[in-house]
Image (cartoon, rainbow, N blue to C red; front, side, top):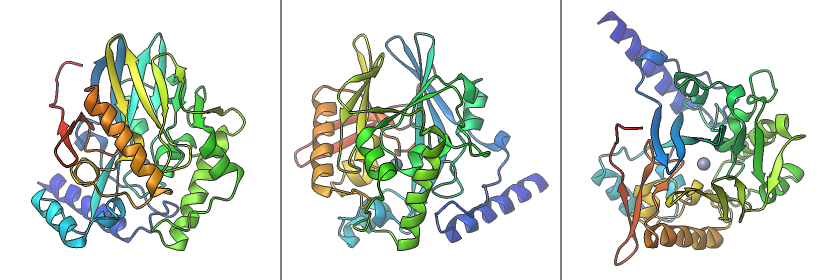
Length: 327
Ligand SMILES: [Zn+2]
């Protein structure tokens, strides 16, 4: 019981830290919870001949309005209440995907580290739990350069955290965020958050600046990994189709943050830089997934984030995949 008490106090401290954190990640202590007390942070499945593993980097959270900015307040409150969720805080997962194929290990997304609060940065422990070291990763495909997708690229010493990995980044995001000073004034964030957000992007990508592989979505960047233009959330965002034989998986990146808020309800994520383009992208990806019955992985969906999208009379419906024990 004593151990439980300590665990509870640690959890409470972490909760208070999360509530007080400016979400810049610059001054936030890491959430302290022994790895052994956590549930599994990985989920294995197959896509044809490809061995796939969702590897969690943890979570981030914020006011639900950020993720459903076009929702009428009463409707949002009802949707959250009906889903037995708190009204003041919404949690997003950080589902990176490890692909093992042709003797290579490819990571889709690098995860957040602590750039978006104290509960990210679990990727390395969760990779270690399945016997994968950072130097075992051959390539990383980034869908867009928001901090929660690139944060782990920078190691504690300021160097590249994945020393052997070729890091693939959409060129339009590199141009917008790295070559220039991005104008994010239309996003619903306070000025200090916006400054930290931009600084986190630049700092996270700095260690790979010399070796980065820039891509324009619309081609097979690695065997079985095809990028699909999905701009709107950021200028260069790419969705990813993983394919092997007849099997496919569509990674929708941040076209949707949440099945509840952005699929079952048609609400727009506030951080979409170009809302009209993002809405067109969302519809195109959802229609393709539904029509071709392609399983979907959402980076921010409840772990492990896999399911299907169905077209309904008025919109779409998320159907979460059941847990499978064979990996
Ligand atoms: Zn994201």
